[in-house]
Length: 175
Image (cartoon, rainbow, N blue to C red; front, side, top):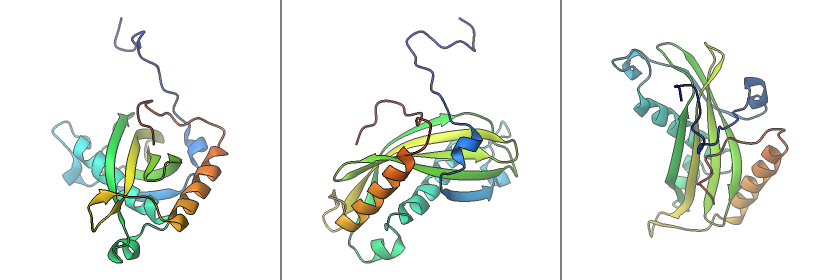
């Protein structure tokens, strides 16, 4: 087996094209600063997670979990699982766009993906599949989403289910 072959026990994920990603909401845009580079001259892995984290908070605002919600002490969010797939190199000054797709939810958990596009190179640079949970910040425990937030999440799920491509999920994260 050479470096380009997929081992027989591994399923090859099908990633969306850039045009397929266009209907998804943009939740981050910016350029890669020099401080994010590592010894190989590309963005270090720690900054992928940092940018995905920033984008996730913006994505959460789309369904009512924003700074005002957190400040009101009604609730918050906990990260439970992440699966990052690195697709193409990102370098200094590359322009990035991150888009979000809602996949599913349970009473307390939300399953979503973020897609990092290197606009400079016109390539899908990375994806992250996430499982997060609503949290009661007083008890510091997971708790059910309030009905209004759950309804907004459900609306995003319904909207994103209309896309004509399957999300490239890892297969082990389930709400």
